[in-house]
Length: 199
Image 1 (cartoon, rainbow, N blue to C red):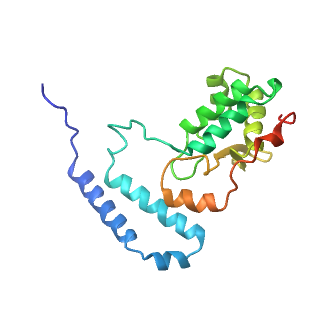
Image 2: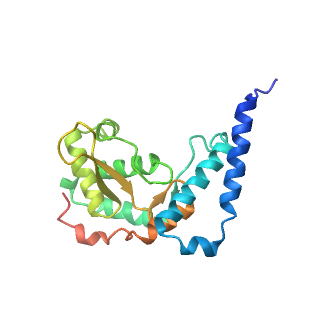
């Protein structure tokens, strides 16, 4: 049986070669130099290197790992699952667990941003969008995720809520970026503090 081969045009090959060369140049930066740079600069260099490596090898996300994969801390993940099971019934533990599972499957590479919108989460969990805010609030109190507000041009108010995974729990992308962000982020809190107070 004939094997299907994906054709690569000459401009594509040229672009991949240039990306590989640029990634190689960035990888030559000494550890000593990087250690003297601000954390944001190190993260930017790591993200650029990762993006160039992906551009140089665009097909590597396919094959054995279709769609890529996320790295999990087994200890933190097991602790979160246990804590979710112990949440009071009015905190909707089954839906909180479902949301957590969806979050770790839908992370933006190298930022840890949760890529699902509130409506998408609601549809997949099978609940009203208003309940998603409460569910995400529970995960935020647990320290599993953090929330930022993103202003949208032409939209009044504080902006839409954007969630990010705690890098101590899960990650998708460069380990250098994960290390830098984890150094600035506390691990999830002990969940006993939530008993009777989750909302």
